[in-house]
Image 1 (cartoon, rainbow, N blue to C red):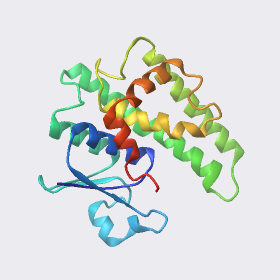
Image 2 (image 1 turned 30 degrees about the vertical axis):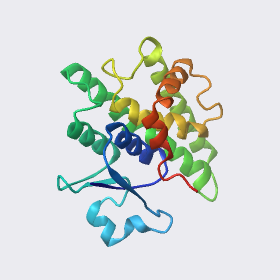
Image 3 (image 1 turned 90 degrees about the vertical axis):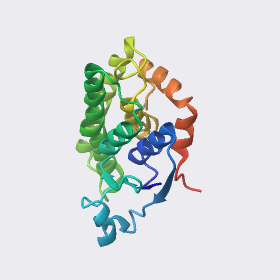
Image 4 (image 1 turned 180 degrees about the vertical axis):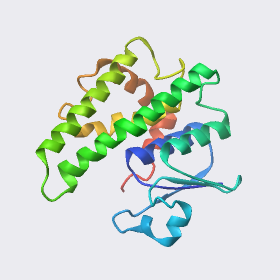
Amino acid sequence: MIDLYSVFTANGQKIHVMLEECGLAYRAHAVNLYGGAHKTAEFRMLNPFARVPVLVDHGAGVTVAETSAILEYLADKTGRFMPQGAGGRAEAQQWLSFVAANVGPLFRGLFKFGAAMPDNNPAAVKFFMTEAEAAFAVIDGHLEDRAWLAGGEYSVADIAFYPVAATSAKQLPQGVAPYTNLRRWMDVVAARPAVVRGMAVLAPA
């Protein structure tokens, strides 16, 4: 059995979708970030970074933190959603890293300076918004002549980016409207039954 400690955000949804796609049995536990549940000594034993998601695979005796690491762990565990050839695998890891290191932090910055702080910072909001739109344009261009982000097949790269496009992009003035190729790709991903189930995990009642 797998225990997943997570939240209803894009990062959590990436793992929810991956678990559903892999068909693995798991229990999802909502972590009360506003209540500081992730900062307790008990939780830090699972993840010293005090962040979610965290996956505990009891059968394998493995605990994994950090979204991209969890995605790769599940891909390796099941032999699914990671291209097998060296080139395809490298490409999937490249886009997985791009989403984790570039796209995700841009939306965290946009939320922090545009909504979370008592006095928002227009200059910071403009910076993060412009950079996020540029990142989406890069992905939109990449998808112009291909169905998937990497390796010619649906992979962890697509699973990692879809929740960002579906939820975080709502912070942009036009959302995903300007990105034709991206919207086409989103429609295909959104129609997958496992994606529908995964995106609903831990949804507020």
